[in-house]
Length: 222
Length: 283
Image (cartoon, rainbow over all chains, first blue to last red):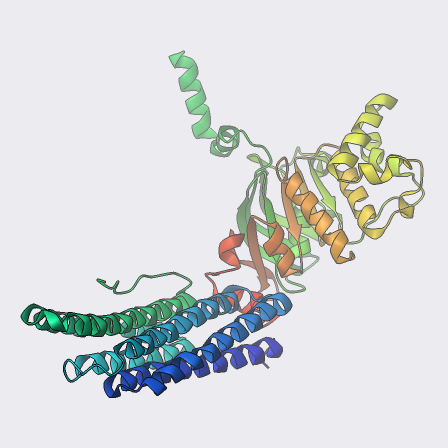
């Protein structure tokens, strides 16, 4: 018979909340790229407004964690899980902020003509969202090996960021009139690069839950 | 000078434990070596070895019946008082075996005091006499002013003085549970022990009295070696520097599963059985 059923039931509820929050943020990130591609200002405004829900979810999870610590006094791996959850929710919430960052860039761009068709930036977003989804799976499964592998995949995002950076630099060098538009796209790419870094932080927390040790995995070059 | 140095050096090689104790300038280091204890034919604890640090609090945790109380009762030769109580192995106090043939158990119990689960002041004695009882038993005669000095010092150390200084002649039984337990601690301190063993000292107390005893233990740890048996894992985590986890093996005898820093044992235990116990998966 499983002991501490109350603790584990509440922990499962919190884990479900984390998955829900991860899903909200993934959607926000992908929609922000859609808004960027389609110059969809309405969608951009919607992403900014929806971020309040993400922030609300974060505080809800924090409150549940505090309550669990106060009432159930978890120790050892149970304590590590709660501490990791507090960190992971912060990371997810910040990824949501990067989606908001991109939405704000969309509003700034307004109806300016597009500089170029977007290829690598959407790829960065897809890779980041895929890493986020799998990192949360690794969290639920307490799978440190999977977490380590996912964290290393941040290199792919960094590589795409390099490509975007170089390409935009060429645009700017060739025609200074593109500088404003190119810089805005660079900001968008930078937001995605940071979002992927946050995923590696989540992976490090998963490793911490399993091993009790903090490992820095594949430190980003940015 | 060189000769003196060599003599000292030789001495340290012959008696490393004494040397270590002297080197640290601390007394009250307990080294338990391969300790087993029986009640008649029943083996209660088996092959326990550990070094208990001086001027620190060591918590002994584990499920009911794992031999925690038996273990600390072996540390001041109280176990042999129990019916059929028998011990094998060594307990070294600052390098000297307390079970050696020529050692008087009464002297050991004075050097290693004990406080029990239920506060048990002598009911017919006043607060003053309760604290003075140990000294009266161990010394042939004592001057009144000396006794008064010891009683005040002990009560102050036990953080009870301010609450009882005006009623020292009242019965010890007139105090609250928490005060009675601190009175028992004062009684143990009065004979100037080096080590204090506490067997579930707060299990009969409310949370406020418990926290007071815990604060008191922290203060006392600056001067004494403290070993506490507790069922309350949070208490062990709050109060101790080192923690030992005992568990019954397949022969239903207590074994030492893990011993380490409290900060490590309660956040990242090395042994799966410790992890399962402190996260409440059994016990």
